[in-house]
Length: 238
Image (cartoon, rainbow, N blue to C red; front, top):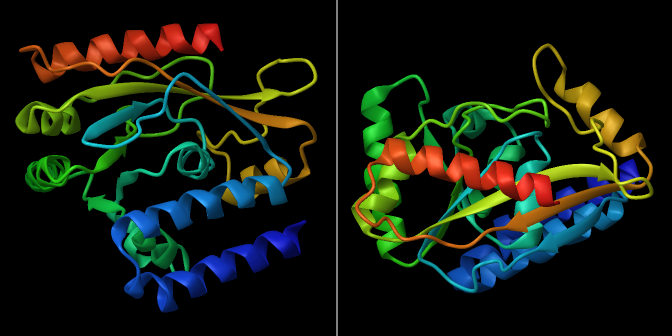
């Protein structure tokens, strides 16, 4: 399994380097979604999608954050451009995959850079993109949602586009119980999380898309709280 996953990752890297420059954006996005779905199949993770994923943009997806696996799962459900910490740009190999998926980068500790990213996000939303953010800002334990940061939600307000809540959960397919195999929180290491994920049996990722909602004059803080409540409700119905 591990060798097949590594070979699939290398294949994605090669596709981005050699084929993506010749493709239109919509074709690139389709390739990313197919690649992500195939990677989940290779590592034995079942994917269940509930609700209606957006057919097209512009829309900002807002999701809870559990694991490094979340981005792969969401790409397999519906291609979107993520906003990620700038550190990723310096990661060998991974940075190429992230760039090929259209990732936008932010210096999380810089308020000035947050403003820059909001402007960039608003531009991409006006251009019709589907963007995605994790407003918790870091991974949680999979049980309790952390407070939502409202800064990046400002982009949807400035671009006057809808936001769609997305709930993520990992469960044991047989029992339906929450699985902590993909957990990556606190002192847990990435290697340990990846190993638990690859050795888990019957792991299912459940992605639930809620209803897209227009700004309706809300402040970003109020909207962030409403979205947090919506995602909590969606998680309870999974």
